[in-house]
Length: 252
Length: 315
Image (cartoon, rainbow over all chains, first blue to last red; front, side, top):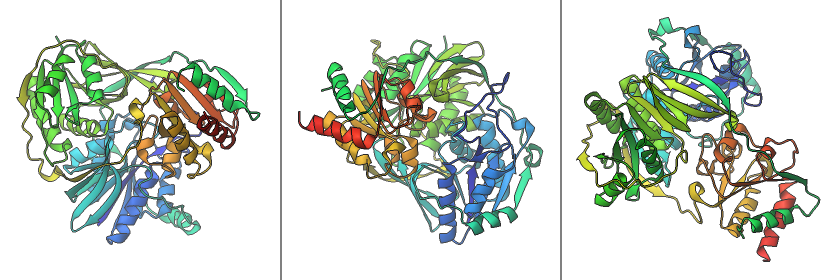
């Protein structure tokens, strides 16, 4: 079984994000990290590939930088990676991203495509859905559990009320929620092996896709600020302050 | 007059609150057609009319997963009816339908919008970025424009409209994109729900362990509150995704929000900073959560919460 996992390299969320003057695009340093939520997709892919005698290929779009994020996913155990890096892709919207990823996935060949539900830096939250439409496969989103067998994939799909059990034939696109599986930590051997694994670089021309972004961010304005109120140090009696505020607000 | 479509899901036989919020907004922008998905009869249609729909396209997917057939049907309909704007909510099935529809039509999506306006050649939307500290104003030259709106961006208010025209929207066979819903599980949920509870208590990494979330639940019980969580502890598997409050989780605007051991990452703030009163407990005096808190307690949740619970128990 061929499993393709979509991953994204993002600026370290622990650092303050900046926007580029003029374009309002997110500034992407050369050292980016693997989006934390992608670790769940990678883990799910590795488990399903192992159980079904398969391989895991990573597909990623964005500036390569030093490729640290992709190496992190390879170190978990993925077999190889394809990275689409092209200056024309700067400021891409979700549809362009989906077109690029879908084209790369098609070239690789796939039985199952796995992704997170949304990236931490852009959070449009519609790329997996768009990929599934472009590949004409089912959209099995927000999965908290995934099983594959007999040419079928069955997921538990998160709903507002609980979850649905959803079934479809392969090939399919699945997006997994954080917490669906326990992502493994790369071993020392995994990290060393990852350095030798293939990261294939592709451009828009290689894929025959055109970047046409229809959206622009025209202005960035400060939001009306909410001012902080009273701040006290707990010296054993702070809970009384909470109780008196709850009383004041008639909550108790 | 602009033609605006609003995607609305059935919630236990009636239109969802999120859908009614979008309808309320849409009726101030133009002629409104509601795309209503799920079971529903005259009562549901009347409600849609009351909130601003002049017309209803009613779709039932049966046991099919709706996204692929609904997107296909809407794409065909877009070609003939040429709406200017399609509004959907930032919700599971809405995202699926919007994503497939946009890819099919070859137009972009403006996602996570907090406000939307019609302008020449398309729409202008507002998006909270950096935890809501700043607002990005974006435009898209789509035809139609497709916008996903965050829940609770607009109030849901009836406008006194009459019964709408109802037409059945036939759904095609989605072929290779088909999926079946085999079973539906409603999770047993005790107490008030996150999205509309007057009091919400959330726990974060500062709790230290999954076991310590029990403190949040105990306090929740005492106050009749819903319990939530930060992305950090959801990602760590301490609590289920359904409890996540923030950018990628639920948006809440309760009367009182208590943040226990929550640092106040941008991702979390955007989902709760519009709560009326915010109380925060955190060890780190510099935690960003204090910048939005009406009452900030610099202290250990393991000391403050047990005392608070005990005091409430002995009332």
